[in-house]
Length: 272
Image (tube, rainbow, N blue to C red; front, side, top):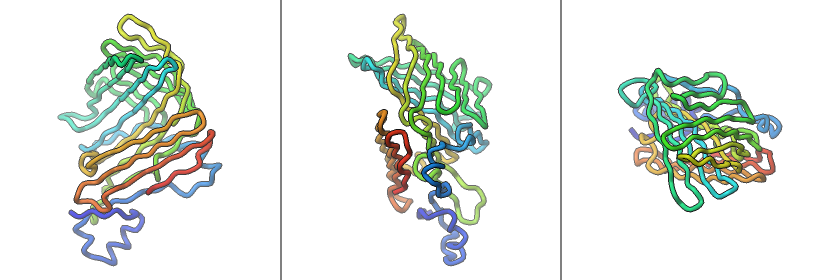
């Protein structure tokens, strides 16, 4: 199929005007309603904080974190769940620590459906013994995999926001189902307080961090040829730029989502 990005709200009109669309897939931004600056800075709806569990075989969801400690260490964390395997809601946990000297320690675990749970109307996910929980602006982490154990609290300095215009929707003309890709920036910049145990050493992880939560009912490799991310996390400014380079079957060949927060206020959300 040839796929052309347009607003999904125009889908019916396009079908009526051009019958040839019946053999195509429509890709477009499902944007949030136009909000005032005051409304934008109240944060996101509670539904965006919770999980979006789906029986769709292409369903996937992830909670992503990174942090920079005051002593020069770097942390990356990823908790994920998907239906890509032979059973539903298979999940995994990854945590990486890059110490100031460049040494890398990685912990990884894989879990079945009976070891996974996630709240629907609030922020909270449990995978095995690992757990993320809290509510804006404060989020708590307990991650223990192999030689790493993270006990940390991240407090957002800026309001949470949906990345770009909210959601990217994929719908074949004539079909009711809409495939979704969506992500929420929960803490564009936040203060970290806590400890990281690396083997037998206990380290202070005080510093700055970032947290987002996204889900999809379409496998990203289906439409994305390349995926570039630029993140800036600073007490005065947060910027998140996602640039999707799409595969040959899609037009246009690029979608970019940008969110900027300056001095604690959400200044701009844009779709390019």
